[in-house]
Length: 200
Image 1: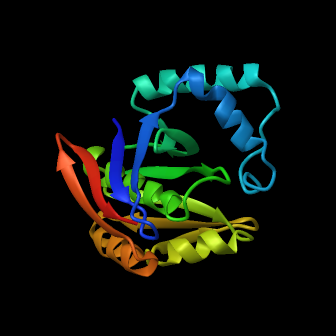
Image 2: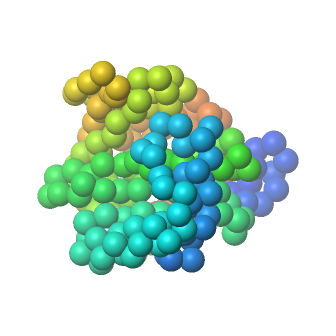
């Protein structure tokens, strides 16, 4: 299960390709470098600075992937690794999206598009009706982004807001995000896999 986008950067119209592919052992070093970047990973759970432990975690994850319990994606921009995003807590009705983490070289709208791609995969490929996600209360920038989706805030604790988005609300939410960020992307489908063409 993968997802890809071919488009042009809106500023210089240079060709770009954005792809999500399932994580493999060979990605361990890159993932560890992302998670050890204290500025980028400030809102994620702490990671041990051990490549061996990261490889062990991915090996365990691949078993969950094979069982259809979780999907962990590596995002690439023009073939260069730029970030990760994950689908987990998969049940009959819903999934949780998270582990949204990108390096400093990623293009401004690519991280946004990866979130869009993940939601399209959940609603269309996995055929679930609800996406759940949570955001640390101090992460004002990401909260502002998610508010564009007009999600339901269904719970909060001392640290996080917990939100949900339904399939019926998603397509209007996606349109609002595209308009807000000036993204002109057409979403196409081929054998259940979303493919994106346009300008961002």
